[in-house]
Structure formats: C-alpha cells, structure tokens
Image 1 (cartoon, rainbow, N blue to C red):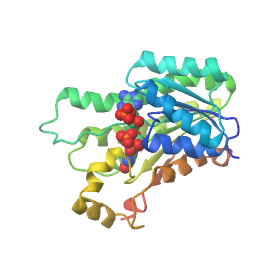
Image 2: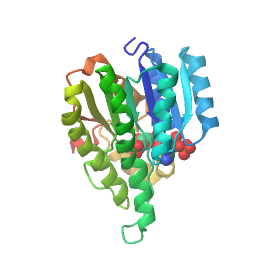
Image 3: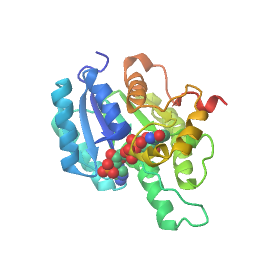
Length: 250
Ligand code: NAP
C-alpha cells in the first residue's frame, strides 16, 4: 500500500475525477477528506469509500472560492486527523461561450473556482506541512492549459495559471520538503464532458485527436495522482504530468 495512513484532502471530490482520485488513494490505504459544495453528497461519497475500502474518511462542505470555507476545511482536517500529508486541488468548472459574450462575472467565477482556490488552499495548508517538514500538493490543470480550446477562454487561462503557479510554488516550497506538481488530463468521462461525449460527432472528433483511441476514466487520473502523492515521486517537483491518451503528442 503506497499511501498507508496518509491524510489526503481532495477538493470537489464527491464525484467525477475527484472521486476517482479518492477511490485510487483509498485503495492504497489513505485516509480521505472528501470536500465539495454539498455536505450530504460529501457524506454519501465517504460512506462509499468506507464500505468499499475500509478506510477512515471525513466529509467537509467547502466552496473553494470562499476563503473562510477553505480555512475551515483545513481546520476540520487537522482537528480530526492531526496532520495533512497531501492536498489535491481538484475542484473546477467549465462554462462555454465566446470571449465576446462572456461577462466579467462569468470570467471571475471560473477564475475564482479554478485558480484563486489554489492560492487559498495552498496558503491554508502549507503552514501545517512546514510544521511536519513534509507535504505534497497536486493540482488539476488540463491540456487546455497548454493549447487553446474554442469558447473557454477563462478555463484555458485558469489551467495555464495552474501550470505556472505549480512551478513557482515548487521553487518556493522546496526548502520545506514540500513537492508541488500538477496533472493535465485530456478528455475524461465525467459530468463536465458528458454533453460533448453524448454528441456522436463531437465524440468522434475528440477520439480522432486521442491517439490511444479512447476517452479517459477518472481512475486513469487517480492512478497518476497516487504516483504523485506517493514516495515514488519524491524527486519530482514543479512538474505537470500530462495524462491525455496522447492528445498533446500531435
Ligand atoms: P465535474 O465532473 O464537473 O466535477 C467537478 C466537481 O467539483 C464536482 O463534484 C463539483 O460539485 C465540484 N465543484 C464545483 N464547484 C465547486 C466549488 N466552488 N467548490 C468546491 N467544489 C466544487 O468535473 P471533473 O471532470 O471531475 O473535473 C475535475 C477537475 O479536472 C477540474 O479541475 C477540471 O477542470 C479538471 N479536468 C477535467 C477534464 C475532463 O475531461 N473531465 C479534463 C481536464 C481537466 P457538484 O457536483 O456539487 O457540482
């Protein structure tokens, strides 16, 4: 078991990629903090983990764009588990629309949930990791942080920002033995991509750009996250691990 008794917070993790990461980490013996915008849904997700993997969990409602709620998430975790080994910044949204139509409010919402949250969560968790003299931070970027995708200017900007801040934080936090890395998924089957993947033509187009010829699963990202959370990646920091079935190889 690669993560035996590690305490891991995953934001936006009651479903989708976040829950996929939670499941892969629970299989490796980690204690998981599920956090999302609905307490009841977090509790349901925790019950599944406890039943399936016999691990300890904690459910904490946390809107990652709200600093007070982020601070509370970290405090509740410390109260229950006394330490935090790994933070996974997973929560994210995407809203489609031309840059010409997008309002300031819509732009801010995406940037606040996808990127400002990384600033809030990092600021809240790092003092505890410094005290412990170790820690790992993993953030969900996207291939949309490397290449443009039509009609999601705010999303592309937020994911490019995650790739950049990952490198900066790696430099700043290395002296405390804190590793900071990101994962850039390609197209993964979740609610976020459901509408695109339901449309036959769009699905074919997406698959045509994925050399491995399939859509990714949350578990594909979960396995990459286990690697970056485990001791196997101790000499890796500032890196964005692309998990995209070959999309960016073009
Ligand atoms: P998803 O299916 O839409 O799930 C996102 C999760 O985040 C949901 O549980 C959602 O809660 C939660 N969430 C939304 N707003 C939040 C907030 N303000 N605070 C806390 N939690 C919030 O998305 P996903 O596909 O699993 O994506 C997870 C991460 O991977 C995101 O950062 C996304 O950008 C990134 N990513 C995904 C893909 C892909 O193809 N799916 C590709 C590249 C990168 P509710 O369920 O209550 O709405």
